[in-house]
Image (cartoon, rainbow, N blue to C red; front, side, top):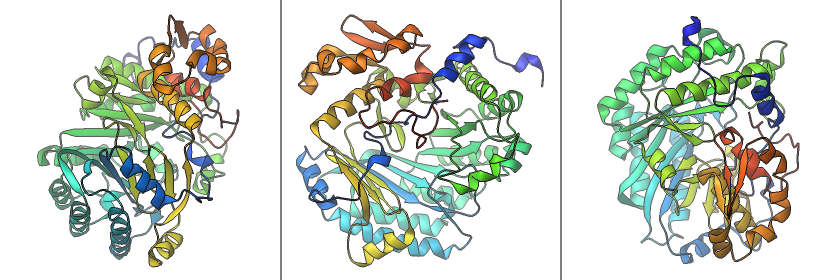
Length: 469
């Protein structure tokens, strides 16, 4: 690779000091798609169970709905993957699962105020494009029959370019989908073999062409850095490849190596498989430098978007939101998750479905919501949730307005947390201003580290979370 394709000076200087700063704060911390995080959910749902959570949600202003449908099937296992999935080549498995979803949706929809409108639908997985055209059409009819959709509802789908046909794209457009997120991860052949996901760039180009021609107006591409066999040079070529596809958004995630939780990742434990921490840090620096130079805006938490994209606009207007699907423009919506392992989020708490198909189906057979665990938010949880989400989405805390909103003096109530930021302030990651706290430009890669200082449940050094970088 020509040295002319390597990045210019990085946003955190690519010196030993800059790398040292990244290394210093690279310990395991949550991604804060919720607070408290899902590992704190309890199986003791009494006396505030899932039905009561829904009833309470109806009384909390009867706001809009955001639906998430988890479609867990994959035709093969990607060895890096941390998702809840079911590996099979049997297409009939999806038919049986759609029967399950129909039962769960019916049990849930009867409890929700029918006047509430759906403003967002996300199909995730697994691989939603495991489903055939007919199965996707059935799913679309199912959700539209059970809920009222806002005419401007955002409908998004996760797509595996290796398994995408024109007929599936047609069915997705009939469902109303206009946003697609493509799993690319890396375009280097050696990396693809190492992670058991062979996906030549021509497949990505074909998928983008199919989607654009069908009228999809927003395409996101997912990349991962820190994978086996990756180097700074190979990852630079991957970034060049995906920029050639002109995506509207990019998600550039750090590979989370958790073989204790995901046994398939143990294959990467062989010496020399994973890049050295400094190499991985340079990949992160490279990605941000390249994407900013290409005109993308840093949304936060490894997310980038074009300046005129709805996500970038929401960030500028301070209406960005964060949930289990990542950053969202639909703040204020209650999330209702359907399918195995799906998580629902309302103002009062969280609930998560059973993680195995067997337990999920057994609950539905008894005409019960298939909820395995959850969490009821206390008033203190809500306050800390607000502080953490403001940092994650707005990168700042304004003490006066927050004190009025939360009903406590933020500076005195969270004095110890604010004092704990001294090291981050000394390193230029946060800056105290009159009446507030700001995450600096240098501090953007560390926003989850800043947020973690306000987490009352976090055990410092816990290995249950991915590393910050």
